[in-house]
Length: 322
Image (cartoon, rainbow, N blue to C red; front, top):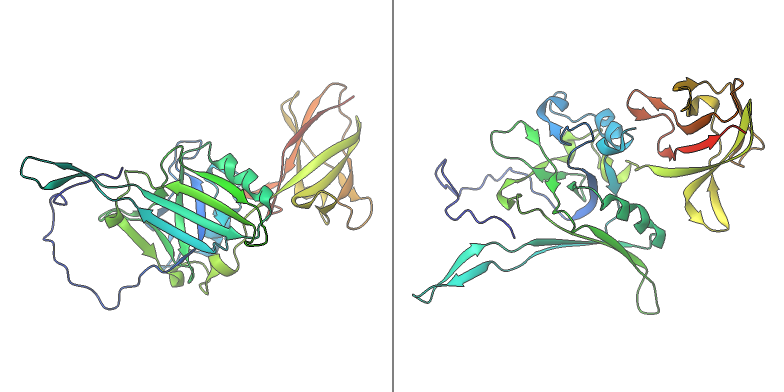
């Protein structure tokens, strides 16, 4: 249930004039999902200080999409084909005079439908459901919709009610296309009166950047084999494609990888990473000599706070030196 504030609280007079030049939010075509609070305790939001000359830089947006810290990352869900945000009727109590008094507002339920994604797309969406989430809505012009409380210097994402977010696949048949449906409810702490926008012209390079050009990360899985004290083989396969037609992680170099020795608590420099044949995604990696039974973790390199090989994130994998 949403909070019902009755008379709207105290403050300025309730004048109802409209500004003819004010921009409005249009049809929702994408979501930027994120954790409400990062692991270090900071809130995920856009601050007024993040803007440069009134524009949110493209480097800021890309830095959020490709953040090496998953708890500070924006998870972009693009190409929403259907969107509904129905709100239930208010809850009421009928008193002795026969009038129905509003006691609380109904919940706003969001349904987003994506046509023809892989059914397995729901896998990572479901992983997000384990956290307290929030979102910015993105319309067909690339405008961001979120929460701005008057007087605040922050433009915050809309909070999602805990335990309401889920995704499911709808399989194709003769009468319908295959779809993925995402459903959740806005948290009751959010008031529709605090919904506001950041216009597309104030985001990145403009021209519908988030809708047309921005790319969300894809997992790059890695299998480790042929392990010796001085090297190993890494086979990279993207978490996309099909069972017998996988997408290979081709074109990586040694500096795209990060290796850590968990036993000695030290970084290890990969001296070379040679793709066995162009396009295979199979790399023979050479390293300084390790000690038998050392435990190592291979992951993607990070430049600043951004993944070096974006839009791919190498899924961290640990292995022991035989």
